[in-house]
Image 1 (cartoon, rainbow, N blue to C red):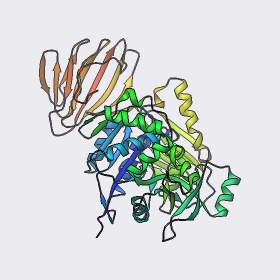
Image 2: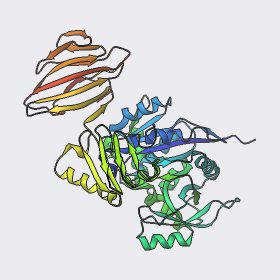
Image 3: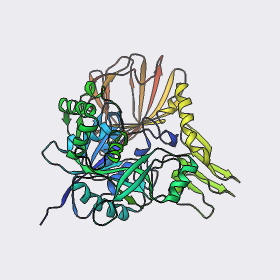
Length: 485
């Protein structure tokens, strides 16, 4: 009796999701947001593999930018899920990311099948997805590199395509990869749909860790060598796997498709490369790459409208309106996208949502913070929300989770007033340490070493008023930090 296949879920959590601005920002991208249902896209990605039949499922592995490590670890914790978080010091595209994951997967002598999933996709039919994954696991365990092609229902110009070739295996579902095609124009996409052998490129893969590393050795030995050195020089810190920053920063950037998959399509029955195979997948897949794609997958009313948050619609059709706080009222409009956040409002025609990226590019050129951060900023200890600001003052609402501890720090250019709204604060100010309860306050003079902690079992909420000549976040001198920043 053969033992079940060891399956390692690998979630690639890169990308900034600029076309979903203003909800998605560079410092808090779309995979961390709850856009469809209560789970974030990353959490939904992890959850959809739970209960897979016919395999032995390991804990998930997430590959992400170092900056997101605490948010991702917290999102896994909220799922009741432990796992490994592989930290990239800088983004180098998906081929190095998967190479680091494969190196981490074989570290203890195992050679699992890797189920490689982008963190920011939506799949509405989980049972159909799991059924195809089970079939893919069997092929990958035998040495094939498996990708999943989405059965197209429209001549989509926003996706790359995979042409399915000759049958592979005994059941006839799997096909050899004949070729990869870049995003086509409309006429070409229409011809692909009519021809019938073309599938959308989903970015989902299955393959043994050793098979990927061997293929990288043939196709991109330079990337493999860099990742091996960076991994060997790195260290493990709890659930975090850190690679050597100086080494990895020199790694060439390349995608899984360009580095390996296109070579497999060209190689045929190569003695040095594995078989490249595509399985069709019809499971309500979307990469939610822009607002019109999100509108497609969300529940709609009888007029085709999607309304989330504080929204009133009157005589509207096919409109997406999302509010994070303030009331949105739309009258007599159609095919619009209206998105409200605390610091920005987007209004776009649904056919132009791919161009939202141009707005983000313009914000970056202007040096505006709205391109990269929300007004509410998450930290490993909790969050802060910039409520108000003027020339020499700034007001923040600070929430410290139970057990959270800010760094022992000081500021050269500002003083701070702290007012506890709820919960209990332990304050270090100079040589003194004391507790503050609800409605109590304290003053932190400029240049004084200080720390804020939440020793209680409920969140600590407080108002911080900063005053001084410079109020930037880079005016922080840290002396001790439990989060290693």
